[in-house]
Image (cartoon, rainbow, N blue to C red):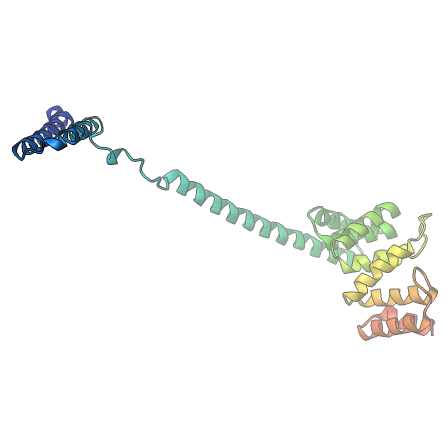
Length: 251
């Protein structure tokens, strides 16, 4: 826009309009003899003059309003990056889980085939990656000295970690282990009963049988042979060979 146009719209035109309106108002008042309202007219003149000044100084007030913020391209890129990052992390976790399961499965095959040292190495790897089942196996192997030098304290620490994570075999194994004195480590009947009961309540067959033995001998619970036999039968009904053996021995 040219400078002359800007000057006209900003200063000259508002001043002209203010002067014209003020002049017309005074002329009408004198023609009709409205002298009583002269003081009011003076005030009106002041209002028009003030309006003219405002228009001159702020010709485009509406245009000076701050526009509503719009989503920038950077914001859109940031949102896309965040979404992509979450998807990538999810895929990475899935791959990690699959790899951990694969290592644990290979370790189980080695363990069952009698290759204990190789199985121990793979179980340790899977345990470090977060496999509770592998942690149970490493603890079991430390406890029995299979594939590694026996270490009862280390075994119990690992078994306790696996049991805390919800591994039922670890609960049952550690419960049975804590009911006996091992390498100078005293039994802990209260904890043994707690672990066996939790595993039994979850339906673990051998935990039912071992809990029956705790009741049969009164280890950590009142001695109750009838309850022991009930637990043995429940274990047998769930396919526990241990329960069948204990039922025959302790009848």
